[in-house]
Picture (cartoon, rainbow, N blue to C red):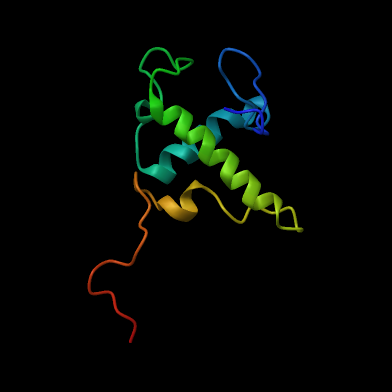
Length: 102
C-alpha cells in the first residue's frame, strides 16, 4: 500500500475494513464477489502472510471502490467488488460474443 491509502493498518497484517465483527462478513463478501476460495488471496495456514500477490491487488481494489463510493454525496455504497466481478475472478470488460442489442 502507498502513502495515499485510506485503509489503516491495525496489526497482524490486518487492515481496517470495518469494525472487528465485520471482518469475516467482509472477507466472505470478497470471496463470493470473485467466486474464489480464501486461498485465492491468502496463504493457507498463514492468513497474515503477504506472499500471495492477489492480496495486494485486492487491497488496491478496495481502495478504488472506497474512492469511487466517497464521490457520492449520499454516503451509500454504489460500487463493490461484485459490481464488476459478478462472481468471476476477472471482470468482463465487454459483452459476450453474439450479445447484440435488438
